[in-house]
Length: 257
Image (cartoon, rainbow, N blue to C red; front, side):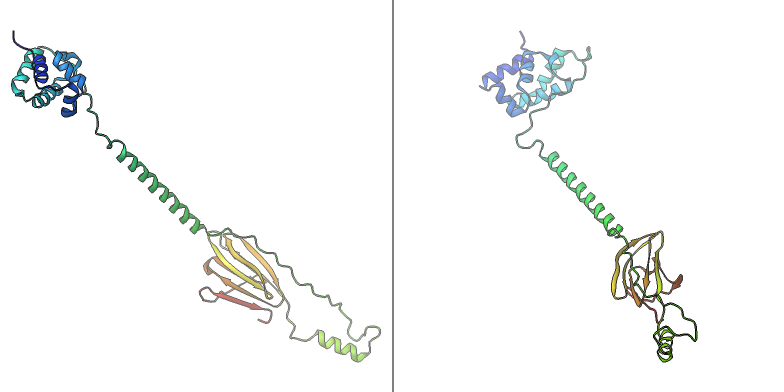
């Protein structure tokens, strides 16, 4: 009686004194698949294309010629007369220490790059927006005494004509100039940094946003340092004032001008 393919494999393995586990480690084919091949249980094996690969690998492990064994498999299975469903082979156990490392490192690298991109976008947006503009510091106009008008030719009680004449001369001195109103307006689609000094005190320092405006009463002099001149319009008593060149430009205004 002719031996079957499975009997040939089992006999050769036992003659060589090798176990199914040793065959699995060498051929990287699961032991239960090799056992099914030895028992002729072809219906439990994957598609014939993979089984042929098993036969070749197992034959080389046992020192057998795979060609006649492949022919014997064709005869036993009668593949020409039957159509077997395609079945995926079971994957061989992967070598230790090589699984999951590459996907994990790749995932961490991608997360790191995404975090760097988010941080860069946030930093650029903060730089473009600039600091939040503080509210304008309201100016408090200096209190000035009110001079009561007097009728020409009359004198106040208790004063002689000479003293009254001296008072009239001092009130009419041309060197005393009136205070003026300083107004700053920012273009609606822009912003600018400003440092404004009124009568020797810093009235405002910071960034004004588009559409903002502020005004102060100037009794003596005012100084303006302007970060972005095209976005700023300066008014003196309602009249626009030309901003001089500079980096940054400084505009000086006084009641004597």
